[in-house]
Length: 332
Image (cartoon, rainbow, N blue to C red; front, side):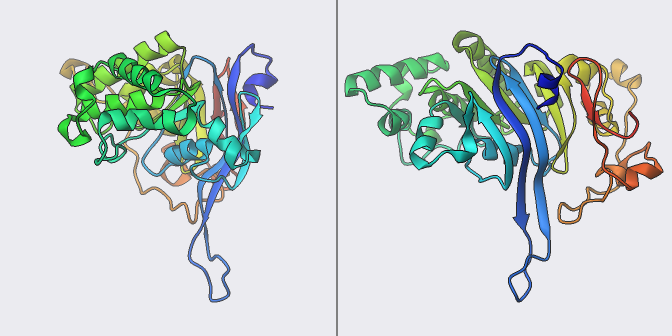
């Protein structure tokens, strides 16, 4: 059982992920045997409640986007369990996957490359209904009109092509496409990282408004902790393929336990120079270990400012602290 369920916390769990792994084989010998294995996602477990925003944060290359792709089976996991709405995702056949993906959609990082440049906005928004729906042309036209207005655009935009829009407008179109089939869960994979700061705020506020109106559940993947703090209910911090800390927004931002989480939070820029004077910055020294050859013990050992001898010998087990707060660190 996942940690939250073991403690008997009353939750309405929409997604339950247990011991998820995604390994890639590296270079091979002359006999076809892999010389190394890249552990992109390694033994990741978490649960997502209906109506919440669960964020996954960490440095580039930590495995957060791979985790999101595995949930959709856009990338096939190596091992683990994914239970969505009481349905075992990893046992679904092709036709069953098609039906499953109506309920779980994704917003991609780059709003330009994720939209077909040869199609108008109307054609892009019609496509989900043509693939999954069994409705008339008039009904499709009406739904497309409602979608474009829902994300803050209007009908005059439907006959334009993606290159005729700004980055923020393109991301609104991507959001509209994700909403087309009334999904229960949306994976937001760095949805604002390619946008200007002022536009980021507009998109984040749009996502929050849509969540309230449509009772949506989000998995929000990002490296930007200032954005994550604004939108999250709970979050998990990933490092080199593993979750090192997980808890509510207040637990993580007000009382971080793992040294890596503390270092990440200390790097958040503060606009007020006077506040910056009192802020203690934690500098992480050293390079990120290779996922081809991660340390035997704690993966953060070589860069940790408070490392101990035992950290080098064994990977720390998950420790459940107060409430929903959990951490993998030998300090606890």
